[in-house]
Image 1 (cartoon, rainbow, N blue to C red):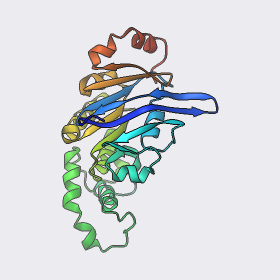
Image 2: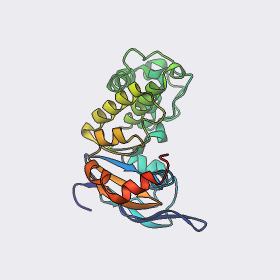
Image 3: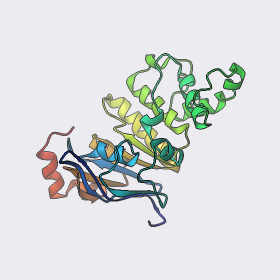
Image 4: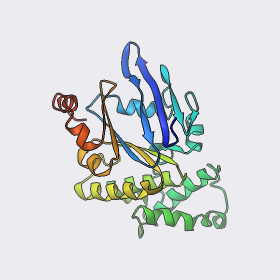
Length: 251
């Protein structure tokens, strides 16, 4: 791996009973970049994410993170290395407050996932750090709001705050703006740009406006294979990309 490459796959393939969901994908993500994985419905994007974090085992191929092969590693071990997929630790507890949700993520970051019985004084020692993260994702003023009462866009911001609690070196964001109103899309786009300032982001995203605004590099998948790579201007003009998007519903 080159020194500026943080994540690399070589010939990554996943077959399901004769159906090839991901075929010979060799991906290289540059350290400190925002890299988007896009493609029409059924392109294999989410399967790729599941392979990278080993929620699925590849049929063949290798995955390298920071120069170390992680093929076959347990998902929790991969997260501890600094490669974190948002939903791995960002399940929002609807009945708890915003601050309590972030505090639980901070407990997990310390390796104490289940120390709910600790004294309130000990737990409150985490509040300053929790509030820093809450502020970082634009949720200042919502610290005592129950997560279930948050608007959808703000729930996604809370999920990112809980992900940041693990201090990931690289974040995998799976459709971070899916289902959002226009104003929420703008807020989350700005948030992703802020949190990417000192880390690497790989995201699956359907909103091509978000992709064009944020991405340094884009990989286009179709039928499980890499169709094109490059910046937005390059891939958006690629004839095969145009055909793939016009020939299939975007989903």
